[in-house]
Length: 206
Picture 1 (cartoon, rainbow, N blue to C red):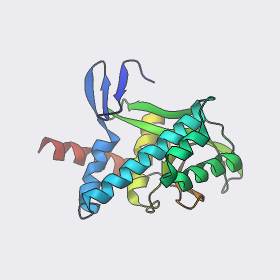
Picture 2: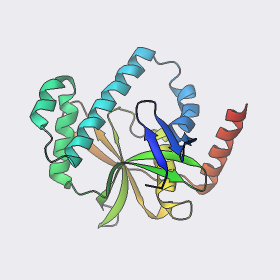
Picture 3: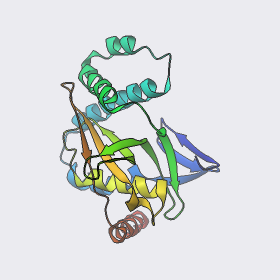
């Protein structure tokens, strides 16, 4: 983590040395306002709340040796399918990782993000294990442009604009039925990302 970087999880605010910074979530609101504006706020809230609890489980499972999985499952039976999906993923893919829910800062574009996982993943196309950025999702629209944009922005914050395309990116989709799907995502081009960030800044200025 960069020196001076803090993250207020409750308010979802990043600061560096006390100064508030733009987040990837802030920038994605442009996309969300267009594509999810017609969805009921109740449905959006329920999906966000479910995702937060699933992420809480995966983080505690990966980081805490004393985490009581059985107790968590008992208290969160409505998301048990997602929990079983993640347990299955770890059993089949291994539970090695380089970082878990780690905040990053893009010095080139002055924004922050939290990366779900950076971990080794076997790349089926290349036949080798490579370092990858993994985003955990519980929603059905796992192949959306939004996920591609989010992972690209995350990758730039982690590796920099000149190196992000050298690494792998995946969406880990956990289903309510205990299954998972690991989907490779191609990062967007540098030109598009520069255009998108400039567009966001113009909209923000009004």
